[in-house]
Length: 169
Image (tube, rainbow, N blue to C red; front, side):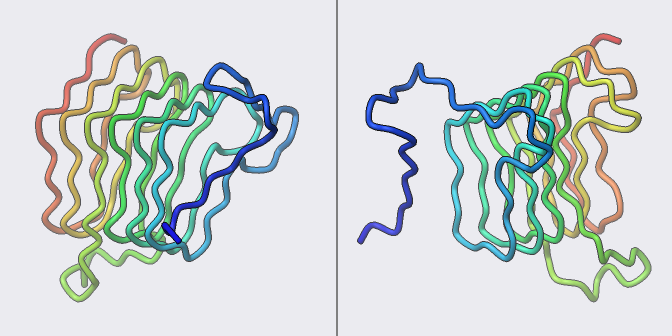
């Protein structure tokens, strides 16, 4: 009736219970063509696959989550984003697979965002928080101890990149 889905692993689980999908190379959450989804308050930690990997969705928000050694990758999403999350030794990426920079104005407005996140200690070969598309926002993020730079906004028209701070390595 409420339009919300709750997952309860077992009856005695509480906020201190650890639920692990370790030693698996599968993604913890796979998303395909999802709409109107909020993932809130989950800690993803130390599994072999992605924490969240999604393709072709809209109105998809990840908020108040922790990602410890598990990355999140959203491809071809619209009006979606990541907010108020903590990343340790991992990456966050929202990108458009089918992007053609020469005809960017002909594509839809993606309006994706990465905002108010803290990222620490990632040792990726490229930026640790990356965003591409049209009319997207990356703001108020803080990165520390990165190897190759904390933030990148690329391949898009009207990208808003403001009030991000990177310190350390």
